[in-house]
Amino acid sequence: MGVLHIARFLLSHPLNRQAPMAALWRFTRWQLASRLLPGPSVMPFIDDAKLLMQAGMYGATGNYYCGLHEAEEMAFFLHFLRPADHFFDIGANVGSYTILAAAGVGCSVVAAEPIEETRRWLERNVALNELDARVRVLGAAVGEEVGKVRLTNDKDTVNHVLPSAAPGGTSVEVPMTTLDTLRSERAPTAIKIDVEGYEYAVLRGGRATLNDPTLRAISVETNASGERFGVSDDEVRALLRQAGFRAVRYRPLERRLLLEEGSSSEESDSLEARSSGNSLYVRDFDEAAARVRQAPRYRLVNGEL
Image (tube, rainbow, N blue to C red; front, top):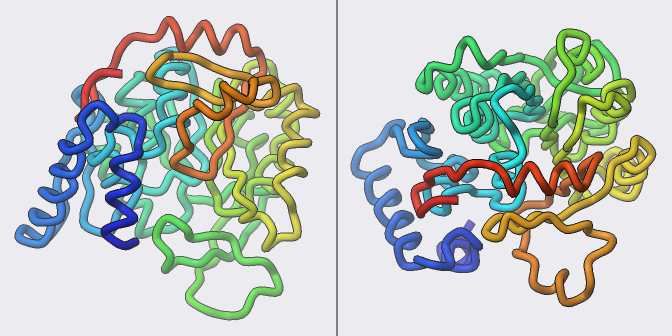
């Protein structure tokens, strides 16, 4: 990603609007420090929580530049979750959402990350924040059935399941489980799914989970990446609607939840631009809206939220 593109992202990010130059300074300071002092660094995250990161970790460093890299979705979970809740982080990567939920909010988490090298960073972040009793790290993919699946392992945050007809390349075979298998231990209150196009398979392997009233909120990637598996975003949305979920947008600075399909054109135009290709869904709109309004404030690198 080029410097100009990053600068535009930082300046337009909703959590940087009050102090955009400070965001540019954090970016510049990190770029200099990560080159002069190679190796991982411990950086502030939410309240007293920290993230271990190094140069090239786009998502993790985005949290340092912007407070929360994916402003809408991360802020929603920060404000929606409560300490008694249970959270599934499917496609956990190095653990931004896991640390947000477990250290920031204080709830229990199952964090699924099948790529071994990435999972080591996740485990280090869990250990750094002393969350071993609260977080279960799972070294498996999540999909439609229990078994094995082949993934790329050289694409950082965009490693993904390989379709059966995909050409050869750098890949690894990993175990696969399902949402319903994980639910058999404890049903989640909320789930984040970011698996680079494999979301539909994850949801199909979680039909009982989707219909469990304990599950109240889901974030799922919907940016056409599922087309490599012959699945459209509309099919993902339809599956969630059938389970009783409604698409929403979240305005974190106002603590305001909006029904996506019911927003006026003026409201839709004024919503903060998503910093990702994720979509939010809730089962009970009124309950979710009350939860985010009543949540405590949290300290980020660029102010309170």
